[in-house]
Length: 340
Image 1: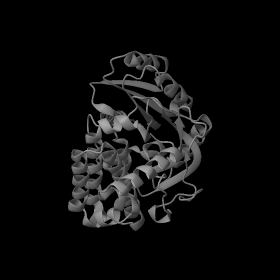
Image 2: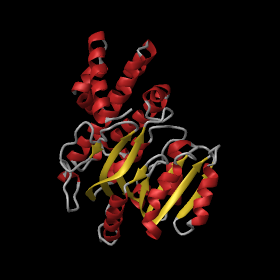
Image 3: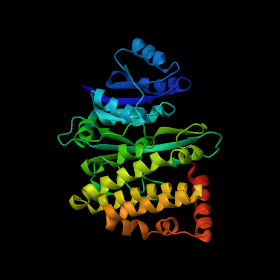
Image 4: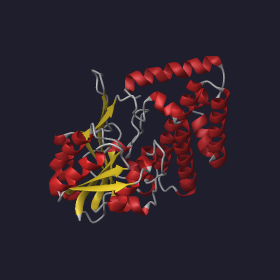
């Protein structure tokens, strides 16, 4: 068994995937790099096969019909032989010093009697053209130097959600959670993190800037114009998150886990609502109302909590003043946190 399986979902990634793969190769034979060619129409399949030939003990190429980012993550999980599982998008990369420290830790963690479910580390917004690289870190929230549970965590700030970039999951725990990401849907990285959370019992945090999250391509899924054009997929993911929370609502064993899942849900509701507000059409207003009604129907308590927050009050109501206030806050957040 490998120590760590790393899936690289790749669709028409010929121009940048080599940088991603090269950053992962120093992990050596403890690591399994799964290049998931998701029905690419460029030279991605050939590049994947080239690395599989040149590094047969490290790299495997998996070719499939196009199913979208989520299905590529699913395929990686199906093929993974590593004790732990990580996803690195094909336009991103990892820091070498942090990578070495993470692998050293995992080599020890794999021998623990009670298995580690989730390893967390920091990530960096590598925004094209930005002089200031925003680092998302958790040292003010999470214990350091020891294993911990949900009851040991602090309060997460608006920019500090646990994202795909910051997690390495235990492979079997992911499978046991029943996670199956929807096909042909963007923004499923939120589901990749959110769905398994109730199954996570044992965690550890390494305060290293490991994942480098590239932002800047015009066709990138998190580009604001692209997100608005795919608002149906954003809403689909948002509703699956609501379903996930509602499913576990009566069985949470940790109030802090419950609080964090509400916090994460509130963040995605804010993103969905603001994008709909930016569209500024009657249809978009109707979709926004429908989303909040969906939450109220599935979980009245979660609705009350989310709607009662400042963001909730601004994004659930109509009116020019609140619209301008919300858009102003959104622009400040964009500039400060470096997203979109």
